[in-house]
Length: 101
Image (tube, rainbow, N blue to C red; front, side, top):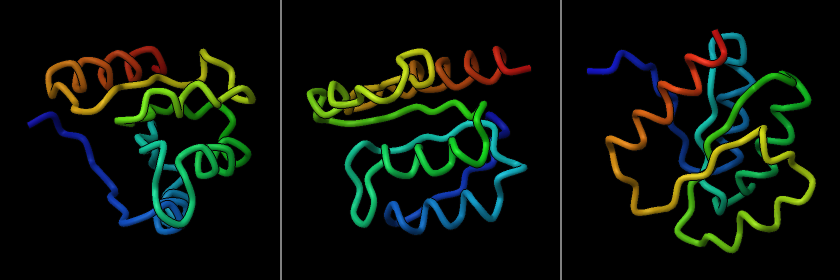
């Protein structure tokens, strides 16, 4: 419907592996703040070291968790609270990708 290719993962470890394997094809990360194995922040920091201009949407039902992101500049990521409004989610994705081009 929106013509995005999505790479899904069951946890942060698998997410990091799949992202690394496809790094040249990835325009945007969408990570849950809290994931088994590695949390979203750990995955983001690893990928950011490989692709410094990567943008990320963090998602969480725990809004206080995002406040702990002292080491990530606020202009490097976007945050969407759960439950996610699908229309707002797609608008955010389109906006980020449009800014990158």
